[in-house]
Amino acid sequence: MGGSDSEGDRSAHKEKEKKKLHALAPIAKPLAGKKLSKRTLKLVRKAAEHKCLKRGVKEVVKSIRRGNKGVCVIAGNITPIDVITHVPILCEEAEIPYVYVSSKEDLANAGATKRPTCCVLVLTKPTKGELVEEEGQKLKAEYDQVASEVSELAASMF
Image 1 (cartoon, rainbow, N blue to C red):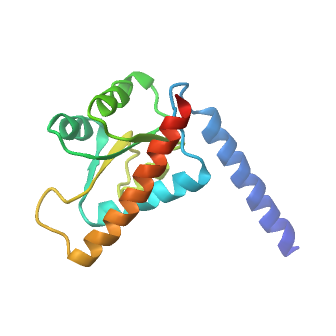
Image 2 (image 1 turned 45 degrees about the horizontal axis):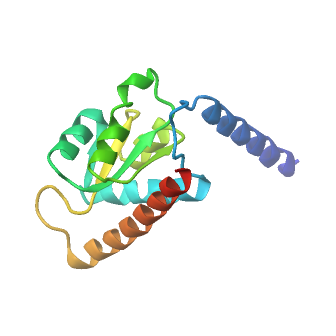
């Protein structure tokens, strides 16, 4: 009997994943795969802990225009899509790597907010103060790894 419960949970999880993919916007490219998505959301979670995160379209656009560098993570299931269509263009002009993840809810959970989030910008250093050197190096290493993978993904598209 115990096996059927986990099987039911698995099928429900697969159904949820399918719904996420159906809700994706047609412009959601480059879309992170499962592995990169997991790694990206982990980076977002760590950045939120260290106050190296800008949440929402307004904050992200303001940061990009001010010249802040980082990795932009955009949710792919945003409706209406017009809300975020200008963000990838700004990222390309500022040479900031960007990637889409499948769900705005997952992005919000990783970013430590209850409200679903359209996009976040992971900064290399906090806006106020400084990080402890050891933690800063860990965050920087993870940031560099995700940034290089995102850049490779974007390069493979064109």
